[in-house]
Image (tube, rainbow, N blue to C red; front, side):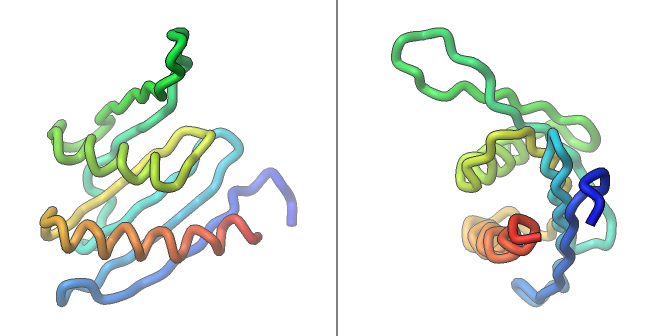
Length: 122
């Protein structure tokens, strides 16, 4: 396969009685993840790890809403996913969800994690 094209995988499941679609595309400099229960991208959030010049080397993250509502819950979800995936490149995360309840977010996170391996194996 030509390395100029992103590696992409798609999946669908039912979570909390809602059909949930997932698209994961790995580009050279970004990972794009879209998870939707409405059939559209929804809000887009960009997460990146910044260089920390302090001695303690605690990671510093930048989270920025690009499209949609700029809400703290969206930033927390995107950053948590970024840390869980232990990414080195930026994450562009699109989501349109019925619920942001903890149980629902945990199910979505597991759905993403179980499918991201498909992109990494291509």
